[in-house]
Length: 68
Image 1 (tube, helix red, strand yellow):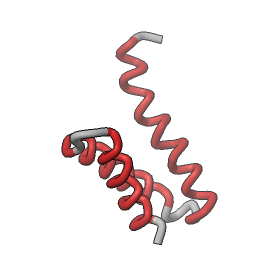
Image 2: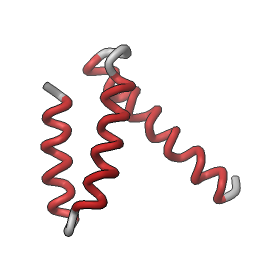
Image 3: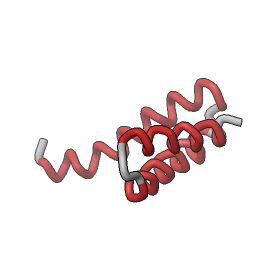
Image 4: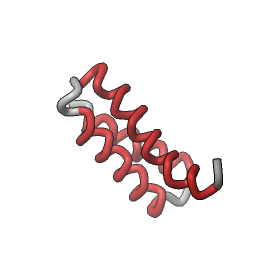
């Protein structure tokens, strides 16, 4: 597998795995939107976070909001 293939397939595979994990708790219908929102929140936080601790703290808040 080339680097390009990994770069293109890894994010899709991660989203699939995350969606499957969420579906076990939230149901298959809600899972794709929740997974995509979690990924978007994570990417946004990466650009804002001055430290790993800050990132993890804020990501926990985002997950808590989505899990309600």
